[in-house]
Length: 172
Image 1 (cartoon, rainbow, N blue to C red):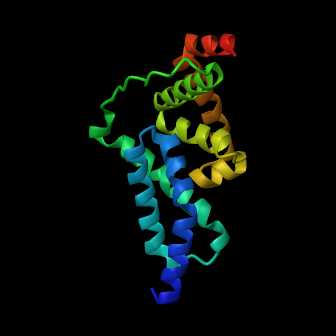
Image 2 (cartoon, helix red, strand yellow):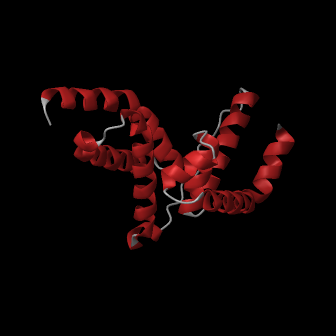
């Protein structure tokens, strides 16, 4: 790449790295793995930077790279192991903040227990704000697949959260 292209990539990276990292975290539930997924996506982007003509599609390219990297990583045998972390204690001084943190923690914990493709669809649809068509494009699948994976993912999330979801609703 020439100097101008390197500068363009550096500017894009600086502007989008935090958002890509957050998306990766929502997909995998671990900040260290999120860093790895984001790095994988940006390396792939850097390799193809010169060939990408539609600079408006960069976010979609990086998003698709993160989703594919996460799904590919979950297929590896050593990733089938489950790591269980205890939730941090929430100070009870501010009940609203505590409820919000408990809700967020329960949701993120629940997402990590949903199968990878379903988790990817839920994150892209509801946390990234993509519509069905945008999610299908990001995952390179049909809109029907997105709809069915969304339904299955929501059902799996409800099953995983179970009573915790009812407890969260009753405290709100």
